[in-house]
Length: 640
Image (tube, rainbow, N blue to C red):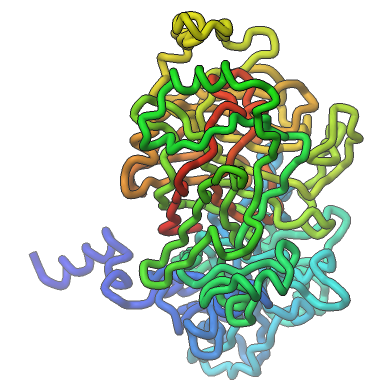
């Protein structure tokens, strides 16, 4: 075969061949009535084949910026395209760059009427120039010489790209309140002639994306690809053939900030370390802060006065049954779970191994404690695939006896202020408060949201008020072991070596999803069926449980836990490797309201009150206080 012919065929069959060899992608030549555009490249100073990791350097004060000043000189993408004036006179043309996150978006078109914008497409993360009042930029006068002329500009991707007033505070644009999203970004170039702007052929809400009309914000990707903009005369619309991939990888070894709301300046000063405290350097660089649980006084325990190393001392179910049965009421220790009295003692950041260690400290006689510990991220995001690599404490010993811990990986609202409200619930509203009862008022929107992994020893099936597991509690007869050491029911023993991976979405009981209901019911995803449970129609959360072996999840050097939070669904996955994850929970917007506000990630080891988990075989009151520290290690967090 002729060499030239072979090369031509390769290009036809594999159009990405040239750019995969290091050449930048180039947009094709597009012709309009008066001009031609080609070689659109929104990032001449960045290789689109290269993943861009978010720069945390200044993110705590201004929010994330793409690209960061540490990544690209000047902290902007350099935009470039070539334009040829095919008219008969010199002319000034106009152009505008738009970008949009493609990984976490609603479709631009309405599913029932493709001529209309999807009702939620305005929620998509899209932007243009930082100054939204700058509409279309001028190319400068282009001679009618039938040569291509290079047009250059620059831009960057920032939070609150529409400059919405809901994210302002005292005149300041708090861009971090609508941080940019991770995932893939597309880029759109629109080039037109002045008469389309002067003649108002393009709506003001497309020229200036901060404006909205009678239907709200207009998504420019809808307008130019599917709406009236696609037929504009003397207008060229070009989409860059490649996407920019953005990933967040907060560093556990960069320190732990102590929030002044949680601990005073004096406490922080006394307990600070080189990588934990309230110093300005830690404030600016730490991606995590110490998490301090809210302790509900109504969850008081009447705990047995026993200290034991449950995981290593061969503590058995017989020990549990004896201690449960034969301590008198006046001997029990009335406490609630506690939090660290001083900061930095139970959380440690290691810059060498880039890890965070969390530690539930041991108890001593007279110093009774079951202390909850954990860390929380400091930069809120909306949507993303959160993957945590960690070695959290084991929960069961070789006798399958539980140590009382719940290992939790969960997302929680960054704020309940108006700026972080969820989208409206248009079917009787949300329950107004997280802690409100059944008589709580209903409101159109709320700021509370939460998505959980809670992993503990409880029952695997949907609980029922009517038919809880039938436990035989035995009788107080110390002389006959069979009377007080009563075995669990067979249905419980079937999962004796397993813990429950509980996946929950706190939807605040919004009734809007088409299949919203209460009780137990199946939710199918691919080839799996998950049993979802909601106590009643006013209960604020939907939960699914999957039994898993404790030795697999917490007996190895690490394990992966992933919350895949998308605009219309949530998928929970676990596995021994990032490329070997399996689904353990699934919910979509047909059964639950998916949050769309900004959240933070928390990783904790905590002593739950088992009254929250009706039907559990073990009661927290009858679990010994820890004789040794229970240690967990957070090795990596990736959000992509």
